[in-house]
Image (tube, rainbow, N blue to C red; front, side, top):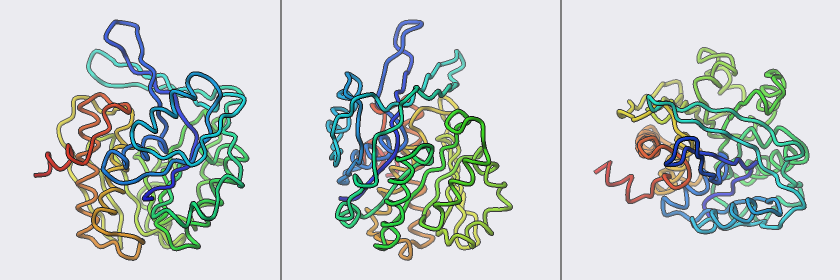
Length: 310
């Protein structure tokens, strides 16, 4: 398979057609990235456990309908979701409120991360939300470590949310720094760049932890990348709104897919030309997602992306 993705799940409420109505969609960065990769025509594997409730079943069906192979689809005794409430302002901008659901930690253990699954994958992907609680954090760290040991392409999405860490930014940063020695590709937002000490700190951070590249996404509106002492920037396209649920995940799903389409199997094979193509591919994927107001149904396919690139 192309992708082994691990992390907590999010329920995404988006505005419905009537005022005050919301539509519930499966979400969460690892799920969205896995689905984006599947929609880009690559085989994706999704490592997850879900709650034994209506939403848990809905989530599994959504993943499977999008071509995502569930490696661990066992149902747990309670839901393991994080809540995300999304509102749409009259000017088209989106605002977000995240809240942990009590007792909602994923019931994923180190035993669920099987060495043969890691060996079968080309890319190992995780997000920082999956580091926020044990035993999920232990399973995540093990997956990343095994990926590095097996010379896989290891991707990590820094997804900082105050509520996930009880407003303890230092604890979040420390946990992220703990796993960086196992990471090749780091995805980060403007806000999270500041959390990591600002752009001036990135070159030293990359050298210290052996990061191949750091990609800073700009809410579906362009991106910049730090790679071999250079800053590569992809300008944004005119967007309907400044951000959209899943835009960053659509970017990263497209970005990782482009690397695979170009034949990249390990970080050492990435060149500036390959990277620029992957950034443009991801940028178009994020832009399409923004145009469609976000959420899983709007994650673009490979055909849609290539249509805009042609």
